[in-house]
Amino acid sequence: MEDIEIARNTKLEKIEQIAKELGIREENIEPYGKYKAKILLEQKKEQKEGKLILVTAINPTPLGEGKTTMAIGLADGLRKIGKKAMLALREPSLGPVFGIKGGATGGGYAQVAPMEDINLHFTGDLHAITSANNLLSAIIDNHIYHGNELEIEKVTWKRCVDLNDRQLRVVNTGLSKEKKIEPREDGFDITVASEVMAIFCLASDLKDLKRRLGNIVIGFNKEGKPITAHDLKAEGAMTVLLKDAFNPNLVQTLEHTPAFIHGGPFANIAHGCNSIVATKLALGLADYTVTEAGFGADLGAEKFLNIKTRILGKVPDAVVIVSTIKALKYHGGMLKEELAKEDTEALARGSENLLKHIENIKERFGLPVVVAINKFNQDTEAEINLLKEILEQKQVSLSLVEAWGKGGLGAIDLAEKVVKLCEESTTHPFQYTYSLEDTLKEKIEKVAKNIYGAEGVEYEEKAEEQIQKIKELGYEKLPICIAKTQYSFSDDSKNLECKEPFKIHVKEVKLKTGAEFIVILTGKVMTMPGLPKVPASEQIDIDENGNRIGIF
Image 1 (cartoon, rainbow, N blue to C red):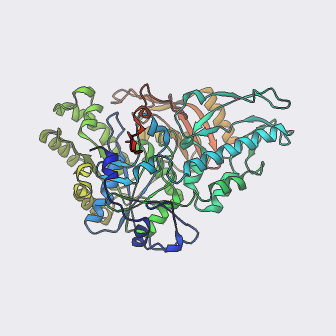
Image 2: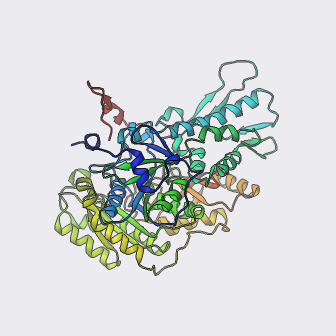
Image 3: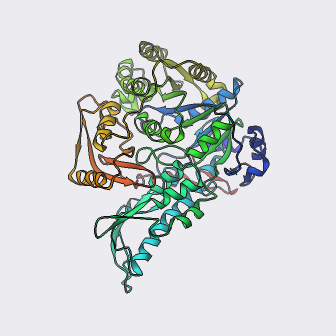
């Protein structure tokens, strides 16, 4: 049975009942139909802080590791063993839904629902973010049209759209030949890579949201001084567009576990974590909050720990690293079409990727770790035993999880191991990869060397100039958000095993004063993806009964 059919055939609780079980007052619930609701932040009831579990993964492969499925299964599993647990996840982007990756609501019997709504328009948050972003673009060009009082010479702000559309990476605007309209080169980012999305997810409250929006640098004047959204008096209107969206979305799993799904930045080109406000609210409502960070631990988890925790004021009590036997063999050089065959040698080689992630989380950051394997029928006893032996040498436990086929029952062992980790005192104090007082290059090089395992960093001339400019402007003390391929520790998507020494190549550095971090663009990564040759959109349709089909 397909995911969409499983979800459609499962009876859900009314969303008011889910909220009531969390202890949310009726006046704080704003329903969006029967099974979705916004929770009003301004009136939330403060409660004691629960445990935080971060779910991350090895470097992903085309096979998919099932990280979101694992996070959902774990939350359901925690409830099966009598714990008050909930989820705090990201919202899906329409780019992957219609592209190659598909949706982001889990799979099988470990899903959040209503999956069709969540994967498509949901409550309109991403549309609001797109509108706020593009309102600022319109205000910028309108200001220039009406005399350019601020003497804007260079516009760095881009428009955005929540779709994969490579044709929009670089565009020319203002070609109508109307009097006073000045043509210029422009471009689009995908909404989930926009600074407004990052601000939306990192703001601590509505006042902070408005402050950060006002601090956005949209370009520079003739003297090279930054022009902000506040200079254009834009932040008030932008905040109004985002006001309702800023309240977290409450839904449920197929087993009725509560879930906040709010904010959705990509992790390869953005910081890859759900909103601060949803995470904080979940921590006050549940004893265990399960959250995830996008792609591998070198991307989403690194940014969660070095960026988000500084604002959240809490680090994870336990970290789950997700993988599959097949994915490890793929990282060990095994061909995709042969992965069903037993191959302990390829597994051993590919396990190096997993071990590096374990080292980073356990030794570099000082957090307790458990490895969760999404189990498949073709996984052999020899392969499973070998992986157990490899992990035992590192004093890390392994849990075989079958949440896709069994829901929470298939994740009870993982839930018990996570609870045990949360209750044990850690042997290492938590530590950041870099200090905010480090220079910009020191931060980049510490992540590259300590987290990726690179031997060094090379900078293009443009990046060198941008680093110097950021230093002159006084923003060097901000944290960094490195945009890098998700498929490898290196910035080369084809270098899976990283056997030979490699360097990270920095091509561009972008200051994000509203998000309050600095984006480091490496390798061939782009902030506007394209569709594959055969996009998922070709399979999405409406059947004769008016049901949506093909969403996964």
